[in-house]
Amino acid sequence: MNTWVVTLGEDAVKMVAQWIRESSYTVVLTGAGVSAESGIPTFRGRDGLWNKYRPEELATPEAFNSNPKRVWEWYKWRMELIAKAQPNLAHIVLAKMQQKDTIGPIITQNVDGLHQRAGAVDVVELHGNIWRVKCISCSYASKLDSPPEEIPPRCPECGSLLRPGVVWFGEPLPEQAIRRALQEASHAKLILVVGTSLQVYPAAYLPVLTKNYGGHVVIINPTPTPLDDEADLVIRREAGEFFEKLGKELGLI
Ligand code: NAD
Ligand code: ZN
Image (cartoon, rainbow, N blue to C red; front, side, top):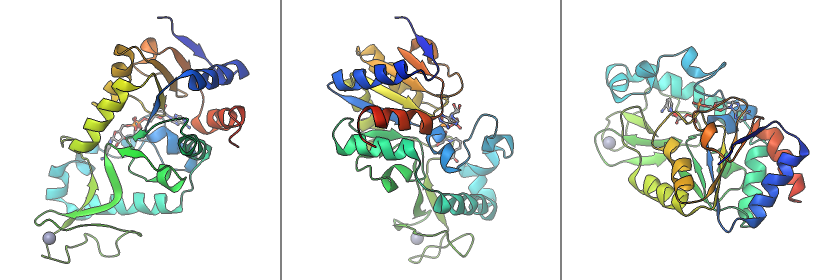
């Protein structure tokens, strides 16, 4: 299969719109890049968080055990950014596409909840959600609506530490979410892969699965990814810009 790498000619938008219309089942995989235009920093890349912070000091169970306050300060900062952010046109157009049954589920590696805030109703969260907290000792779990004031926050039931409800390095993905994602990716006739560096597994495997089952893969990302050669179409553009055009082409905005 040839890969077509294109920038953002109207042809590319029309072609994707046509593929979406023809596809009997389209799913979407998103990563941090879909929220970049909402002002939420990505992890890797030029302005990525991992240029400034070391993942092993912040996003691992070991980091949390040795310095929960430091880890919580970082999450509190991210929660504040996310609370102030607004969904951008990529989130909004994807939500409208989902409401019209143009696409199936949005499988996301993001923990920011912006797809849901834009109106998406079927979002598979592979890496959890930053607003969820759970106790490290008992079964207490809850959802915050603002960043915790006391850092690190404590369990109201047993007094142990609460931890963010996200997946850290070295931890397994939520079983139900990954099972559904694998199933959806294998059934998809088309997968739109938006704003992910495709460096974290098993998320990065999902487009491969779609392709192996005979579906098409479209990647929307301003920088190259390891799967570009396998994709049917690579659109090197920012998600907000691309989905604004696609939304107009599909008559959604
Ligand atoms: P990433 O930061 O690795 O990649 C972001 C991608 O978005 C890049 O390929 C970049 O080119 C692209 N991008 C940047 N701006 C864009 C735009 N405007 N439009 C479209 N694309 C744009 O993010 P990822 O792929 O989501 O990373 C995978 C996951 O790794 C993350 O979602 C995260 O859950 C996980 N992770 C989690 C932690 C944690 O704290 N628990 C730590 C590290 C990584
Ligand atoms: Zn508890």
